Length: 308
Image 1 (cartoon, rainbow, N blue to C red):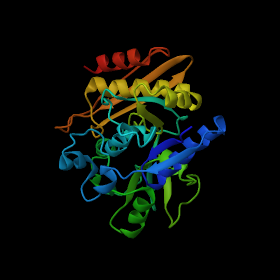
Image 2: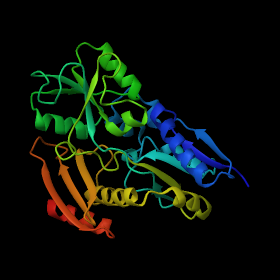
Image 3: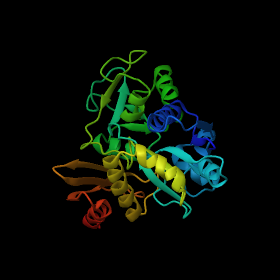
């Protein structure tokens, strides 16, 4: 039997997520050989421009600057499954690919990392905050119009070091999931006198798929599908389906300023969204709904309709 080949990006976080995936697979299938193939993506290579501009510069039209090369490897049979941070994956995939499973979701909150303040409100007037996410940028400036935002690129350790080295920066924003998966203790002081402030997820809405590690395969690959079925976290996959369907209905790209949160409570799926206009500074549109846990796409459709 040929090895099961896991494709992943090469960042510290991507490798940690590949470790999690391979550990889960080996726990269920100790007899199957699992190997890893590390692939550099367009988003990894083009760190010289803001993340929101990479697709335009590369001419890939927002079709997943962090997955393009992984999909090529899938199509060519070089890998059997691609491990993704699902917030980086476009909502519409080519017909011959599909996302078929996910690991249990990590915390979804965004985190403000700084050395002085203990909350967003405590940042100084006109504070300079770095983030590569237009969603985070718009929510920051909506909550604190005086704040100035700048772009930042690089993996988590690189961004933390940039904050330590740049005296002009007051804070950066990161995903709690990434910090946790890399072993950072958010309850303790980070190296270099930094500390992390987790933003309440209802106040600062996360990206669709944030905190979820998902698996993309070739459509119809029943062998790989069976392996993923064994490690799939059912509830996380339900939430992922709902959030991705909402983005699809919005026709939103990976860099559209929209936050969406979903959770399961009392046997229902709850969803809340905040959508900013890409071309104006108007107030965002917000709504929330709840619905049948067995129909996540239908609940996403109801949320979309309340925003129209």
